[in-house]
Amino acid sequence: MIALYEKGERRVAVVEEARRWQEAGLNTAEQAAAVAERYRPELVRVNLFIRILLALFTTVGVVALVALPAVILEVKEVGFTLLCLIFAPLCAWGADRRLIAGRRLYRCGAEEALLLLAVGMLALAVAIPAHEWGHSAERLAWLAAHGIVLAGAILLAVRYGYALAALGAVLALAGLPFHLADVLHWQQPQLSRLVLLLLLGSTAIWSQLRLAGRKSLPRGYVWSLETVRLAAWTGIYLDVNHFAHRFLWREWLGWTPGEWQLPWSDPLCALLTAILPVAALAIGIGRRDRALLWFAVVSAILSILTLKYYLHFGHLAEELTAAGLLLAGLAFGLLRWLRAGSKRCRGAFTAEPLLEPRLYGLDAEALAAIQPLTPAARAPQTEGFQPGGGTFGGGGASGGY
Image (cartoon, rainbow, N blue to C red; front, side, top):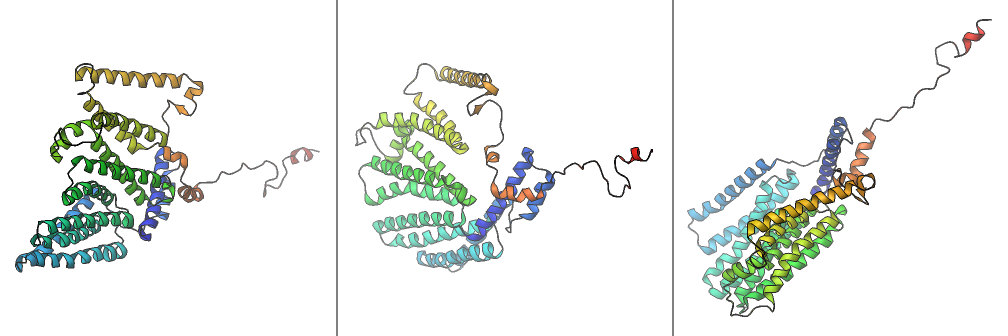
């Protein structure tokens, strides 16, 4: 990540940590205000609404600027390619040098839109001229454009820490096996799903290993890695979900039951449909990862609805009601069990609400920023000789003689 964003994100993290401490009652409003003033980031930030508006206006303006000479000059494929090759580096230069390095914009929408448009126009510049070169050449050109989009999204996520670019990179990676199957004329539709499973599995493992050292990574890079990991988990689940396997993938890939398929694919997909939510729940609890916990909850609900059609004991409403009552009873029983323990806890688990887990770590940089602003305790003054009093504490007795 560029040094400007890395330094600015550290300052933003300190200010936000101080605000969390204020909400938790660990420091006062004056201390939080002093930290915010001292660690004010040297970046220009806007709220989400303004960010979306700036991104939309920038996109419309650049598209109009490219379309104007194309319409006036009545350009064809080659002329439009030249326009894309001219405007793509201009957009990238304007975003990187003028807006980010010059104006110090940080996730304001305009520079993000310019960088994404630069990648898109470069991909179109490669794909559009191949329309007149034949069907095979056109397929290869669009495959090359697909690779450019993938490489550009990865570059934006690594250099600027854009989570949206990271999501685009995962989507481009997920579509790559199907694009390859179309270009290389693979006769086994299920092979694309197997390649997709291997690619997304490797991506999820890589992102999880990188997140193990998140304390030393810039915040934007951590967001990108979390986006990549969650998108990879979602893609894997959609690939192996039993309902998608039996209905959606057959329709999209044009596969019929009589054609070749992976051995034991139906039982394997049913097993993975049940295992993936459990694995995500175990990892989320072990690592206190909120994103994985939410993924586990949503995927578990979808798995119950999916497997209902293949493994069921009654009507859907009855099973869902029974499952809800069972989970509610289990939660109530766990709370009673925890409260019955010594000091209302069992080992490291407790039924009492605790502070946000991040507050236990007490970020070192934020702590160093707040400590000098904490009022020091004053020791009580000792009795006895008081300067300027003129007498000692026991002088009254000697004066009586």
